Length: 386
Image (cartoon, rainbow, N blue to C red; front, side, top):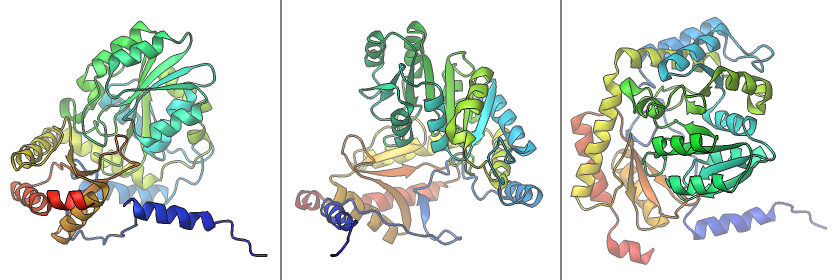
């Protein structure tokens, strides 16, 4: 008798192929061959000589890996330095560094909620927030995108511990959350506000201090932020920032911190190096926003449908998932890498090209990028066929 427990995978693969949703890994070379509008390197710091030198120096001094959980052997003086620098830069009491931004969101959501509590989550939130809500064992109310009134209504139906969670800048369309309104609603409901500032740090606020600093909310008693070191800071890892008692609570209860190996020293050193560059060159934040507006303005002037960016993400609508895949492939053939977002990555089911507005893009590169996207855009006839 044959035993084939994974035959169902073949049916799933056929279903994905029919829907135009097949994803493949595409290893890249060390030296970039394409104009990069696909990565999250908003400030152009991943290859900055100070950042790479800081990462190399940390690896030479502390080793290739952290060697264990931070509560055992994996916490170094370098980790503590980064936590102090992040908290000071972003305007919070304390910070806790984890192995990824994904782990940071899971840590904050599971440790700050639990059975009997309520999480109110924006429908456009990142997958890491969705997964954190699922793991929290709290009741979760998913409310319409960027709708403070819906958040207030959800709180009104609950008696007990509660928090609202939102991206500061949404990764699909690049629009910003209404943070001041959400903060006011949370105060009225005696609820906490948790903000994932992955796409705000380094781009928004004075000198790139983030969306919460820009909104005047950084350091508030009921405010907690998560962020990633892999975007504007050009490294890898994540962090939770908030009141000191919140950070102490996470150290003692957050499973993705307690049971995970600490962030590698090279990543810690690289993030510290990038933070130093950003402190010295705060104009990089404004430049990233300027490039985003330039891309949006020129693409929409050419007749394409794009969402006006609030930070450095520029979203350009595609007529279908298949058309988006072909569009991205045609851009690559023309010498430019762009992001391609399709279901299930997009909660509204609308496929898009996602462009990264980097602070180090030149005017010539911006013009070439726009020309390439316009020249390869799907024709309406192609969209109707797909």
